[in-house]
Length: 338
Image (tube, rainbow, N blue to C red):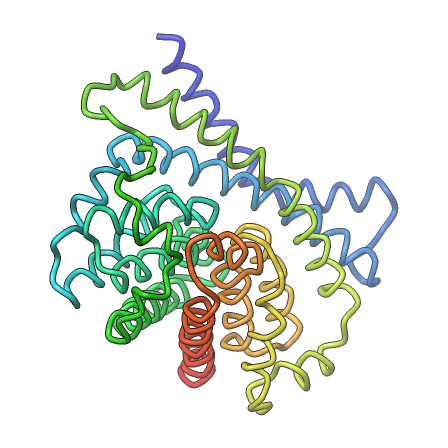
């Protein structure tokens, strides 16, 4: 079977490359005559090491989740959430957000489809908050960069934000702040990815995983390069004392400022995590940086623009305010316990 030999060969090649990244980055410095003792050399080493590392991790995680997603359809997700009691529905929706293949670009059809399937407004928001913020790529990279404690605390706190925000929005009874055309829509416009997954062969599932890699990695690789480049600049040139004074634990206002800075930005977990790693390496408090990361990927300006198609400004404002408050709480908790 050609597909099996190809998969085996690709896996071995990725494993070989990953375990030799440090040597390759060091060799690159030697070839160009740079040393990690100077700032540019350290920045170049960071860039040469982090770009392939993030891309390799992203490829593996996206491929695996692409295969997993052949078992999960939008229709099945909506069916699981429909009719659930408030509270239990929020927990299930937030948990599903971690493993389902939806991101902020899918917000409009998913939002409409969930509501048309009878999913309560607050439960829907729990899903939409969790999906981009606690995705599989973010968790895999956090685990690799900072260890299981950080990844676990990020997951628990992210789920708490998604569940609590959904509960609050549900209690506010803001269904009237959906756009009128959404309120009167009779038919769902959700397109179901992965329908019929039960009848797919192993080869077809692997092909879906490969297509997932081409689609997602092909879209985000430039963000990764830009993010790592920014991280390399911070890593090589920004003084540690400056970062500690701006984003250290002793600076109480650093968490709110980090959230305000992050909201207008747009990136994904793979693109922003190298920046996070560089900031922490320069003395920034981990909670402050995590709050910055969460605001970038969960409250980005493009997502707000997309949601404006179905939500009135009042509901967008409530949604952004509640999530921002939750993210700030996460930042303070991280700074307190780590």
